[in-house]
Every structure is written in C-alpha cells, then in structure tokens.
Length: 146
Image 1: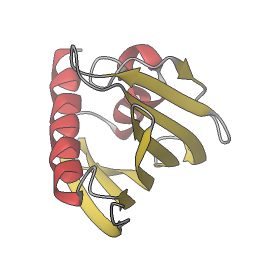
Image 2: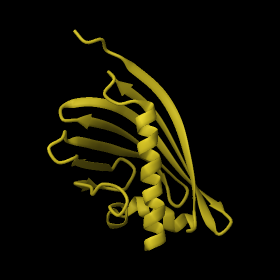
Image 3: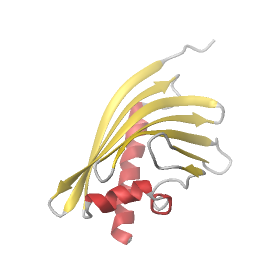
Image 4: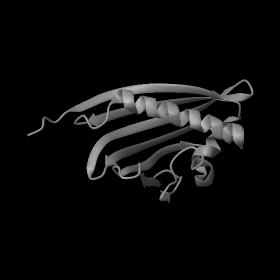
C-alpha cells in the first residue's frame, strides 16, 4: 500500500501590472476576460458562494478538474476562494487562495497567497508556485493586449 502524505505549504507571488485595480479585478470576475489568461470555465458564478469549475489537460494526458468556491469578494480589493484540484479521479490538492489588488502608482500590485495541502506526492508546492507564476505572467500579457 502506498504511503499517504499531506504536505502543507503557503506561498506568495506578487506582480505589478500597468492597469488600475478595477481593471485587474475585472479580469478575475468576467469569464470572457479570465479565459484570456486562465482556462475557460465550464461553470462560472462570480459571487460569494458561487462556483467556478473547469476541466482540461494535455492531449492524451490526464484530465485536470479545478473546482472553486468563492468565499469572499471585495470589489477591486480582494478575492478569497477555496478549491480542489483533481487529476482524473485522484484529488491532488486542496487550497485556499487570497488575491489582493493594491494601488501602486498608476498601476496595481497583485498579491496572490495560496495555502495548500498537496496530497500523496501527486503535486508539489514548488510545481504549484511555478505554475502560478506562469499564470500571473499570462494575466500581465492579457492586460497589455486588451
């Protein structure tokens, strides 16, 4: 029998974008803007208690399911959501994420904090943090192109 492991980890990623907090916040709350830098949602209900769910993965590879519930939303300032990530039928992590939008000059400082539990070696904190940095870089590119 495989040993069960639950690794707890918190990481913080900060980015500064040349866009107002209102504009950066909108890229999280509007499904058409969000799909420019994040996976297209199969379900999107941006309100406290609302859900966001998407499924996808590489051709011929496993299907990843992102299943989130919005816990707190303060327009243009903060979003808190909890989510699970599954690989096919296997739960690989459970997280609580806080996204803060702070004015920085004429732009926005985004502070992304994830508190995660990574299960049974299917994912690691380092891989998740790396993926988050790429995701937030993609957000920056989408802001520059819109």
